[in-house]
Image 1 (spheres, rainbow, N blue to C red):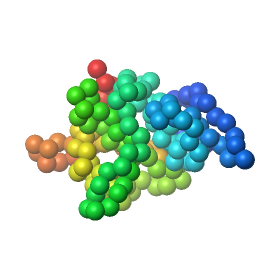
Image 2: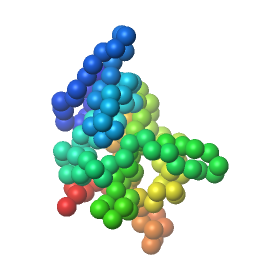
Image 3: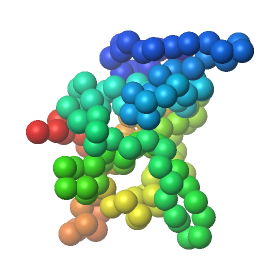
Length: 147
C-alpha cells in the first residue's frame, strides 16, 4: 500500500480470493483493504500509539442519523464518561480534502458533539477544536495527547 504521513506501523494482512484484508483491532475482524481503510487503520494506530487514546474508547464506522438519513462516521474517540473527544473523517489518499470534507465532518459533529475534529487523507491532516462558547472553529497544528 501507499506510504502515508503516519509513522510506520505493523499490521496483520491476509489475502482471500485475490482480495487483501487488514485486521481491525477495534472491530476485531478482518476488513477489506481499500485505500480509505488503509488510511483509517493507520489513523487508529496513530491515535493509540502517538496520541495515547485507549482502544476501548474508540469506535469505527458506527451509524448516526442525520436529517432522516443514516450515515457512518469513520472514527470517534470517547472519554471515560461516554462523551465525545475526537471525530475523524478519513479519505483515500487520492481524494483532495476540500470544503466538502469539512462540511461533512461538521454535519456529523452536530450529532456527536466532539471537541476536536480531524480530517485526513493519510497524506495531509487537518486538526480543529470546536469552541462552542465563541461559536467558532480553531485550526490546530495537532491534536493534544490524551492524558
